[in-house]
Length: 204
Image 1: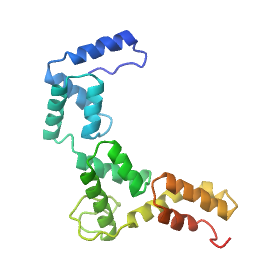
Image 2: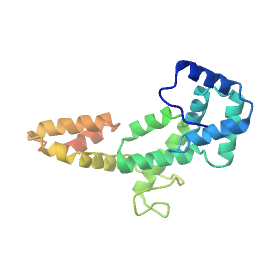
Image 3: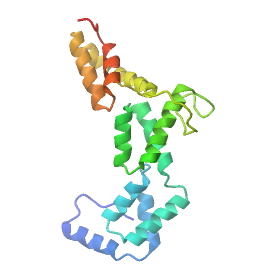
Image 4: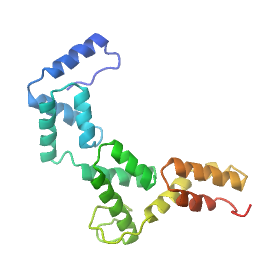
């Protein structure tokens, strides 16, 4: 399936979508879905939305998704684990934000809670399923320690902005800015307070 230019005229787009709507070859829709997955992984819901927006027939869309699931090219649990791991590494977020992001991507609530619980469990008791580089995989949940991964993520996020905070001479203002940064990134108020307190004298 070719990539379309942003300069595509409305008439050309209308003709293209009409062609998609009348498509009868399942392989065409499967190729369109595979192409969408070339740049990065997507959830089942994202692929479905993409193909629906392209006006492919619903039956062929579902057939393509079923085939991708059979081929293990679509896997919402794997996608969610990878998403959370990526966030923890590069753009730390609190559990609230992670839950919201995954929900917007169409991941089932049960899968989201399982992934976040596995994240807490892996942090509380690293075992054979954890890796030396800090990544983790889903495993059975026993009694996870709540909050610990978010505290670590909060400190990593503040660390990424350490230079900017260092330029703020007023400790109180540093704490306020740190608190706001953490709150915007989905950390709960207690973690925001605890982590931001480390940036200045809490008595002034």
